[in-house]
Image (cartoon, rainbow, N blue to C red; front, top):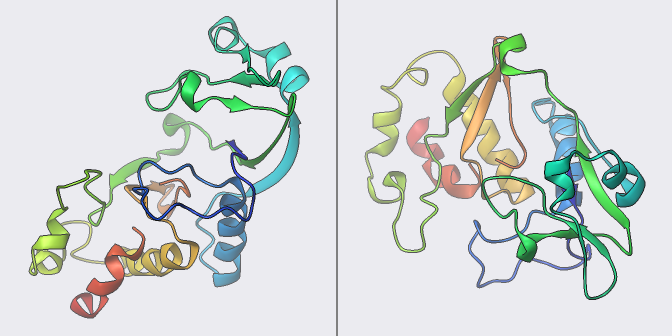
Length: 204
């Protein structure tokens, strides 16, 4: 689930880094439909709907999640859950007063059931305000990647080129990993953007 945090017309502030901005819930939905139109079929099915935080989350939550609920100064019901990043009061999700719009992605089977494998993207960003990734400073980086499995044979590298175009069209700047799944592969919408586009002539 990705909650609606901003009005649809609000754009990313120009001074925000890609790793500090909130993801847009409707961008998830649009990315799923664009993926289908392009015929890639790698994005998980996503839909949007209204959620009642009280009846659909609070009343069925376990003790750990319940401890993160609170009422905001505006009398809205909020929670932040438990996770590695951004799960605190300053990043809480709040209803109005307890109704929340969001996007909901299909739930995948476990890694053990399906043989899913996570791969670090070779053109991932540095996630640092001052340090650049290797591909941004090494003009020979593409040649290096082409010699490394699994990019040294088959169509995996070509698939990354498709994903680069997809991420450019959707404005996704946060492609740090991708996953293979039962011999094929899919993308996580919250996880290459334009970084790979300038490199395409070097890959051909």
